Structures are given as structure tokens and as C-alpha cells.
Image (cartoon, rainbow, N blue to C red; front, top):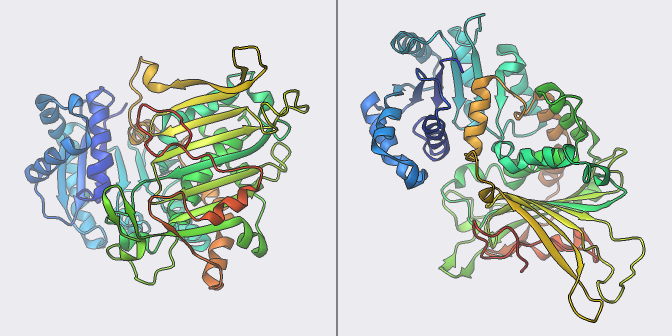
Length: 505
């Protein structure tokens, strides 16, 4: 890996201290960074190099496991950390940034390779690239690389996403732009590709002939914490569904790429988005359920409702829960419903994909096993990454009783190389110039094109209900209706821990 300077805009913010610095420390700890790399934090807080290092040193123990922290290693890591105080919104501050980067180049013998990370509010996503261009910090040469990572949400609606794409594509080439979705850095998400395309026992079944329906769930047992100002202008659909969950749908549903490279992989993702069957207004009303958590008594006492959260409008109609039913209009998936669900203040924190296979055509053991399928595959993304396959077997004894049993795999039992963190994986990919697991501009627009109609109807039709659900429950009961009478949502147990792969309520 070439020597690089990683420039983090928003260096004193929550994302940097919780995710970026711990992930970069993990890469450093596992010798995955060039010996002469540098991290340049950029922000308005008036830190010096030394005071910023002290800040990061105090934060690392809060987000890095204790067994990975050693004083000598932390000291060695912090020697690569620097800070430049400026307001990223003001163009006149960028000549000073350019000068600081040139000084760092000489100090660490770097050849001018810069990676910019925008850990800033979305309002700066379109501003920073233009200011970088104003001083030539976007220009690559044969010897120098310039790459930029931008966080979600990439746009607020379709029109704003298109405007951002226009800005970025006028300043950088597409292969310099890395729109990050940390879900794609998780090992199990990538393992879906191996599961499907490396195993002849699964790929022939991965279609409408054998799969009845698919669930994609990503829920949290926390509220919005201190993000009320951001979340109230965003909501669950923008925060989770339009990016994270639809990416999981695409990886589950995509066709095998011709080659495993960035272009082929991302071409197939875009095809899934383009095949999403548009929803009519009537279907949005019946197939998309939104909710908002309300005050409830939990094990630790009273849990505030969303409208009681700090910096939230007391009359807010922002959704903290979304459940929807969608179809992919292509040969492989025609007629197979995909059910998506996300929410705050749920009973547990879990992200998983559940594949429900069709029952056998003739139920030989009707009345014993029932009519529903015993064949289910659960792909757990978090908290404990792994896969479980459920099928029916005879219970020992004289009666012919069928019971559902499980075979499971979890990464913590695999051993070998450490799994690492999703951000670490994606940061390393970007430094290596591998954009396979990053979102391309046409995928961003195709996703927004599908969800824009939902947001437009919610905005224009105030009669569409926003259902309340008590904090600590599985969301509004109305969400059960979209999966139908014969099916139900797969709810992991409330006390799920890192050692549990699956259990029923």
C-alpha cells in the first residue's frame, strides 16, 4: 500500500471518535497501514497536534477492546496523527490546508497521495469538494492519488442526490469517489456472495421456484440518542432503508457478476434497483407502514417517546419505524415478496436476512409438521455474524414426529484471521483503490428513484397514518398485516447476546 495522508473533515465529531479512529487503530495494530502514513484531522475546534492526540488517546479506550490497547502501540499510532484547525465551509481556509498538506508530505516522505473523508454534516457534502477544487486538491497525476469518501445520506431526495452527483462528477472521476455504506464492510454481507456463488447446493434454489419470501431486518434497542436535530429532518426511511437495507436486498437478489471486480459487481446491484417494481399511491398506503415510538415503561424505568427526545419537534411526524413490502420485477424474483423492516427502540439490536423456502409440494406429514415450510436460512449480520440453516428431522421415538432443527456457523468459531471492523475493511479497500463495496452514482439515483415516490406521498398526503408503538416493542401492529395471515415477522429473542445466533420469542 502506498504512503497516504488521510484527511478527516469533522475530526472532533462523533463518527470520528466512535468509528474512524478505532478502525484506523485496528488497521495500524494489524500492520495494514503503510509505515509512513499520516492522519490529518480537520475541524473548527482549536486543537493543536498535541491536544488533538490527547483527545484521541482519551477516546480510544471507550471504543476499542481493552485487550487490543497497549500503551506503546497507542503512542506509536498517535505519532501519525496531526490536526489542522479551520472551518471547512469557508473557501478562504483551503490555501492553508494545502500548505499544511505539503508540509506533511515532506515530513513523512509522502508523494502527495491524499484520501479525504467527509465525517461532516450532510450540508457540507457539496461544499467541501468545490473548495478542494478551488486550490487544486482534487487533481490526480501519474504519481499522486486523490480519493474522497462521503457518508450517507447522499442526498435528501432524488433531485438533491442528482445535484450532488453532478457536483462530484464535475470535480472527481467516478473511480475517485467512494460513497460508503458500512453494512457492506461486514464480513457476513460479503459472505452472502460466497454462500450463493461458491456453492452448487444453494444457487439452483435461489429463485422464485424455491423461495417463498425474504425478510430483511435491521433494528436497534436504542432511541435516537443525541441526534434529534439530524434525525428529525431525516427519519428511518432516509437513514436506513434507502441505503443500508436496499443494499442488503440487492446483494441477496443480484445475478452472479461475470467477474468479481468493481464494475461487474456494481452493474448487477444497479440492475436490482432498476427492477424494483414501482409502487402506486394505493400500494404505498397499504404496503408501507411507518411508525413512531411512544413513551413506555422498560426494565430500566420510563423510556421517553420520540417527541420527548431532545431537539425533536413535539408535534413531529418523522418516522422511527418503517416496514414495507416490495417486489423485484425480473425473471429470477417475479412474484416473490421482499419484506423490509427497520426501527428504533425495538426489543433488541439485530440485523439479519431471513430466506423462507417454499414448503414441499406434497405434505406427507400433514398434521405433524404442518403446512408451513420447515426450511429457513437466517443470515445474521449483527450482533454475532453467522448463518443458520433450519430444516425438518424426525424426533427419536415410535411416533413419526417432525421437528425443526438447525445447523449453524458463526465467525467467532472460525478462528484464523481476525474479522475486524466494517469501517476498517472499507477504509483499507479505499486506500487500495478497490471500489467494489462502495456505491456508484447510478445506484444512488436508481435507489432514490424508487423511494422518492414514497417520500413525496408522505409529504403531500397528511392523512397517511403515522402509527405509534410503545418503546421496547416490535413496532406498530399494522406492520403485521403486510406479511399476510399465513406468515409473520421473524423476531429474534429479546435478550439476544453476542453469543446467540438465533432464538425464538
